[in-house]
Image (cartoon, rainbow, N blue to C red; front, top):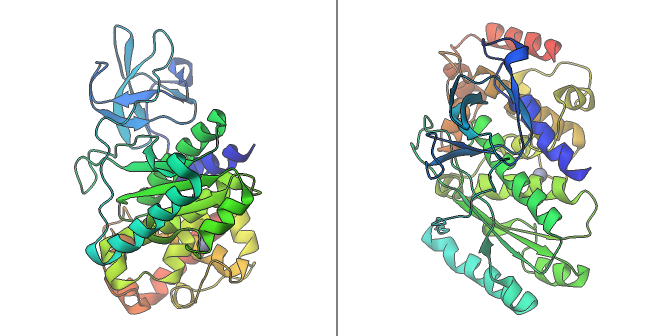
Length: 346
Ligand SMILES: [Zn+2]
């Protein structure tokens, strides 16, 4: 079940359990439900529930119930089955910074050359972020260029894109502009395209052969990279390897314990982790340690002192240990003790 692992990330990123009615009061909200801002069919969508959830209704109004799902509170229509996932009404256009626009247009042109009309990127999913996020109302567009006709696969792919987008933001990343997934039914077409886009995730275009092993996991990983690097601040300032790779590892890994095990049993101080060079093709233990660092920073994000350091690094702030230490109160011994204690609880 390839999709299951991608969605498993939601488990580790979910908000802590909320105080509320007893379990007996909870009702299943099916995957595919849309969480809306009001109990009306055309109210703005807040989130797309991509995995069936058992939720306690906070309020009921006709065929609608108000629920808390992860960091959102909104209304879901429960009578008559779940809603169909909404179509994009006005997909936000990809707007990369000027210097990169020409490179991306060349990639899309190549897609059209290889796939014909199927190579034209088309909208295929929708996602609206938490209204409390730094940008009050954000719509994200993922587009798809493909000659694959397996609708079930494309639906899972759409869900995976939404999961990756949400997981990234939960980890402190800047919201993305958008990205295009290029999925090829023929291996030679994928190879022909990838000779242009060496990494498979250049300029917001994530490309893969549909028959590749672990397809959804690989797309999720590469999409995280594409989104991390698509932001103008990152294009201007770069991004530390541990942050880019740590996020890409976390969006496909369901268990932090498994990461900790592969990261080696001995405890590595934060001082070493922020300096460690990490790349996609480098040692797996380093990638796992980078993921642990990103996860710890997300855990500390809500604290008074550490709030938002990851996000500030995305915006170009110095990512050195000194900067981290300053953000977390300045006392190295206290910080390292807290990190070691957190690690031992995982
Ligand atoms: Zn990677």
